[in-house]
Image (tube, rainbow, N blue to C red; front, side):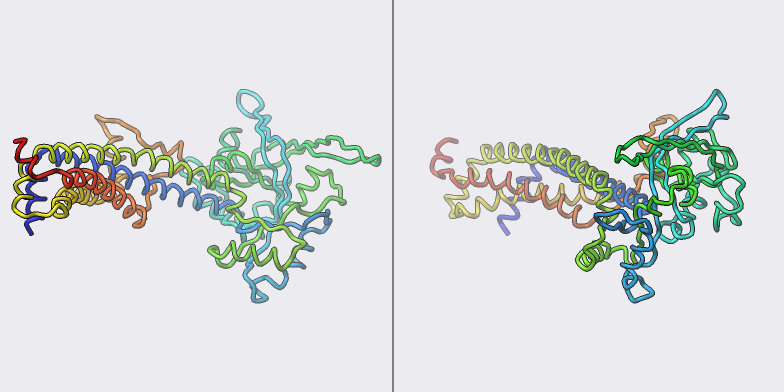
Length: 438
């Protein structure tokens, strides 16, 4: 009890100790808010990626199969949910690079690079939420790009010209509306009878029949969809020797089981190559994780500075309390108990700062959007989060107890370490010399 009394007295008597607590609290709060926002961004980006990517992508290894879809369906027949497996739906994909142009745009022709994708619309809608991207996801300013409910079952049906679906960002950039003509130019490699490779190009006019908004700017500004048959005509000129698809997109019954399903498929069917959605987007997801870690490490230096200030405060306290230490030691207090006193001072400062910082950080993270709206109002007019840039209406947050607890624990341990260094110095003091020097 006498040790605790001394700890509270020493800490409470020094105003600078409260500033040290404040610095620890600020560091913990900053880390808590950053981790919550970064976790929220990571979840939101993953959700947007999952909205455009199938769980798995499957293709036959090693050789060109003309009826690629049929071959994949044959291999995976026993893995479908109807047969007691984990796979729900399959959708064929054919892809090529090209250019999209609006030759009737105001101010002259506009052209942009695109990734042309041939799909079966009904099958594609079973693998990714394509219909949702074409309806619910569209923002108010894209109401003119929304298809009718009647046409949503198959926007490509009953068209005079071949139909085309593209992202809203691409449609905006090309000044397009539903029903407008779009010129698609594609470039492919061709082999002649002598085995020589040459470039082949095609030019075909399509009609814009729908638009989607995935929430991914890189996707919405690049991808265009057409039927697989129109793809064969536009890109390959009707060449029937070409494969009916380049890959097959697969939806898994349990999204959390994707890695296990991939591993089982590859071990059971060595003739196919399987890629998960995370592997296809490894660079994007990895960049978010690295950015999160870098920011956390940088902000943790705030806590390190606070720990340094605690070390300075406690060292000063040891110097000022030399007489007290000499008296206590001469009265029978052991060097171990003296060590506990100053170790407790560092631990108390760290504990109070860590708890206050974690609480403050969680409050800020829970109300970050209200704070954003307050800063955006006059007279401040500070825009800390642009929905046009990030494509999110609000700042996403997710508070992970393990991360928050880890940051608070790290701050507490650093403060305790600072106290341990000062405590070790106090324990080494000679009580006789302490009384003699006063």
